[in-house]
Length: 490
Image 1 (cartoon, helix red, strand yellow):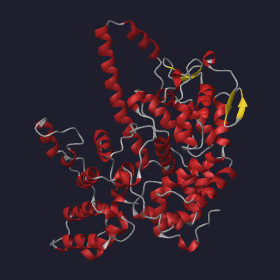
Image 2 (tube, rainbow, N blue to C red):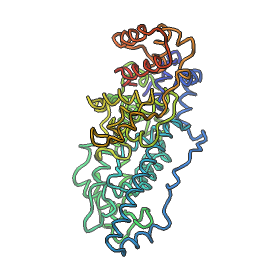
Image 3 (cartoon, rainbow, N blue to C red):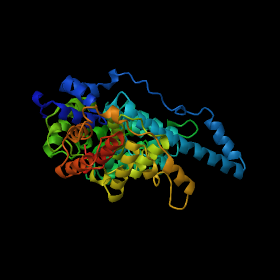
Image 4 (cartoon, rainbow, N blue to C red):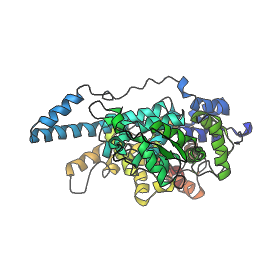
């Protein structure tokens, strides 16, 4: 079983760790408030988020289109040229909606009242990786995102059934076209391999029989809703995981969740997401037992994880590479500044290797050290200048500029500003008095730990060369600390 963290170990460092992992980080004042609550209340602050009002508004277009069926009929009967123009207009609208959707979600992460809920939505988005590249409907992508939010920490089987019937998933894995004459195996395979069991814990016979059980689960394009088509469903006997019966989709998912491996698989993946490294077999056994004892509900498991000694061990704290989203949202929160405009947000995360609503494949993003390459590390350094100084020039490539191709854009970017950080908001006058007071303040705010000796020496050398710690010098020091290897982990 997981061991509770000793009361004496709850302090600024462990509170910062909880804020970074259960949320997206925050400034020292927020960490001090958490530390003052004590471990139990601090964990409850994240896990019991339903008690916190959320007044965030959805995008105005995030609702079914009542005229959709008529528009589809009109498009089918229109002359070819007119149909092409209608398609171009639709695609342009969808692209704009996706820009807005990405910014909307990032805003929820950066300033919403329920950080763990949004962190879980991010986990489920990577777990049930679904891409706009194939779905091509911003409303359906928002709807799936909202599904993850509503069921984020609830019942495992309920979530699996909801995802299986989700229109975006039905399109993404071709389940919408699966019928008894030709069962499509994509979802049946991926739900076992990637979502609930892992490779080696099912047979090809299980895949084919599960695909038969799922036939008839489809999607109505005019209404944008899940629809069950009884005449498409295979009503014959099936054998799944050694059990025989006239199973349907829900029966199959119930059998799936009942497998002992299902609890081990999903709890291990959750641990890795929050702790940064894969758990030992012994720890997986404890996590799976906690999960089963909670009737396959995630909230009690998360409470146990965030309260455990194992979660605050030295090999877990500050040992996780920040994902691009964590890097951007965490930076905004630490700098106490607003998110950049929508197109800049899209360019920032895409440039770092994590384009929300467009994962690279059905496995999602690999995470960990894969986030750090020569190009993405350079992009992090450049984007630090954008966020700290408000300078868009380093973002030229990410925003579409190519040398000698768009000179007008280059000129605009060279002069564009999005607003930088406010040094008076970040540091007190006393903290800005000298190098000896500013360096610890920088470490406390941005790292929650001391810099490595080489990085600290470089920062001190830069500050000691200055005759006065002006606002520009302080912001450059912030940019430098965000460009250190230390800042890329949390």
